[in-house]
Image (cartoon, rainbow, N blue to C red; front, side, top):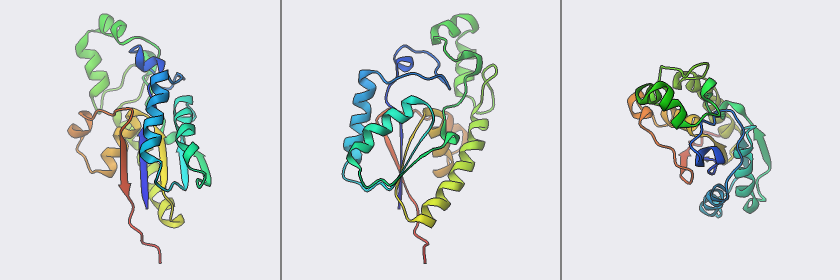
Length: 192
């Protein structure tokens, strides 16, 4: 049994270097192509269950993937895999934040496990909810003997990888999550 995890396609906020967080931003034409690329990579694999978050970029990407998967019997919305909150940075351009607070503060807010952006979440906060999701997901996959796809977001994928790959905090802070990369996890079949 397998879990296929991927990031949504490029959005207008991504393209324009704007902190997205929980704000909704639609896929760009390139984002649609990103989703089609993921779809091509998954085309010949069996998918039983699909999971996305309430944000349209996650749902739009998944919709493109599922065009080739009529065998998918269940679609679940689960916001434990939603993007991290950038708090008061959300909706603002990176350059504006750098100009106002400096590059060091910008880098600290974006790449430090324990430091939160103003009114936002840090990686430790995101990991708590993603951990609950992974515990539930592994149990669900084993009990139901299913393959799952998850259309998620950069920061939740970062924490999912930390948990599933036993990465250190330093390794996790350095992860880059591309739009067309699929992370695949094998779940042992303990079904009797």
